[in-house]
Amino acid sequence: MSRLDLHLHTTFSDGSQTPTDVLTLASKAKVTALAITDHDTISGLPEAIEAGRSFGIEVIPGIELSSRWDNTELHILGYFLDWKNVELHRQLTRFQDARHVRNPRIIEKLNALGIHLTYDDVKALAGNASIGRPHIARVLIEKGYVTSTKEAFDRYLADGAAAHVPRELPEPAEAIAVIRAARGVPVLAHPSWLDRSEGIFRVCEQLKGVGLGGIEVHYSTHRPEQTAAYLDVARRLDLLVTGGSDFHGVTKPDIEVGIGKGQLKVPEALLEPLRKAAQA
Ligand SMILES: [Zn+2]
Ligand SMILES: [Zn+2]
Image (tube, rainbow, N blue to C red; front, top):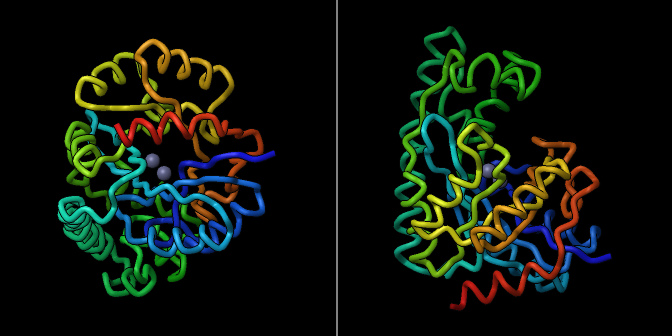
C-alpha cells in the first residue's frame, strides 16, 4: 500500500534524522512522494532531493513557517516552492535572524536562574540546524539539569515557564505571502492546534482571504471526527486537502514516517490537485 507524507522534519530544523535518513524511512514505509517541511528553512532540500532520486521517491520542496495568531503560534506549510528564489532566501534569513535574537535571551534567563550553559554549547549541539528550543532542551538534559525534553519545556522553555522568551513572529498573512511569492501553495498546518471557540471554519475563511490554499486534514494526532470536520471545512471553503505525519524522529518518538501513530493514511490522490494549484 503506497502513501504520501507531506509533513516531515529533519536535522536542518528540529528533527533528529538527516534528510537521507528520512528518505530511507519513507522508502521502508512505501511512501511514493513526500515533502520536507523544516521550520523556516529550505537548507535540507538539496540533500533530500538527491536522496529521493536514489530511492525513486518524489521530494516536494516544502517549508513550515511559524506565525503569530493572538497568543498562540499558527503554522503555515508551503508546497512546491521555487526554492532557489532569491527573495525567498532573503525572507527566510530575516525570520531566522529573529531566532538568533531570541535564543541568546533564553540563555541569559537560564543563566540568571543559576543554570550554567552558553549559547556556544547550544550551537555546538545543533550543528547546521536552525537553532530552536529543542536544542536548548537537549543541552539541559546533557548537563543534567533535567531528565527529559518535556521536563525542560515544563520547567524552563514553554510559554509561561521560567526562562520563556516570546518569539517575534510574522502575521499569518505575511507567512502566506512569502510562500505565494515563491510560487508555493500555503496550507494551514495541524488545525487541531487552533481548535478554539471561534471555530476552525472562521480561521480558515479569514486566512483564505489572504491567500491560504489548503488545510492539513490528515495528521498523526487527528481523531477520526476531527479529520471529518476539517474535510468538511475544506469542502465548504474550496481549500485543498493535504496530510502528513509531522515526523521529528526522537523528539516525537511515537510518530513514524508515512504512518504517524499507525493510523495515518494520506491518500495519493491529494498530490495532483496540489501540484496543479502550484502551477496555476
Ligand atoms: Zn507545526
Ligand atoms: Zn511540523
